[in-house]
Image (tube, rainbow, N blue to C red):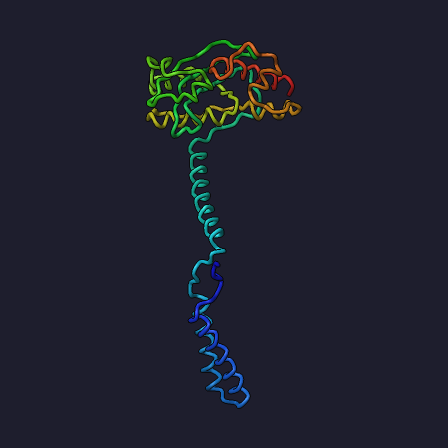
Length: 266
């Protein structure tokens, strides 16, 4: 049988007993008019209470869940602080108004973390009045091998990128292609964070101050009747099925046309 974990130690019971005796003595002394004894007993009560309140109690069995929760909370605070730092570091300016000339970008990557994963395909398409004008596309050879799970999603294999340029060779050309255009992307925070992280990791000097427009948030406002606003869902809604999903250039074209549809309805 488990012992009662809330049972107080004998020492603490002793001090409780001292408090009771001192309190009774003070009451008796007060009745008799013995002020000195009253002050003495009151001092004992004060000191013992201070000891009992400040002495650290051992954790009870029932407190384990609370202690674990506090530990988890502390870890959560650390993670949140780290996320806030990353968010500030990779922040960008959002464009609210629609424009006629814009560049759409889309990255295929080896994972979801800009700090730990890499870009393996870049697509960028310049648009004018909703129609594609110029295209920029390249595979990138990552420092680590592409996991088979990633290949099953975007179809990009290690064989396909083995002779491709590295990130540091491609990124300056991409920035030159984009120029001062407003950048459009679907779930823009993903692509922009990967872009800024890659620039930092490769020590590429830049002054990224392009405005960015996100078709994910735009489509939510303009087409609230849809069940969701994934690129695949929007592609079907606008009958753009001829474009292949999870391929950078095709996703750029789809995103650029969705942006224009949002502009029309607005």
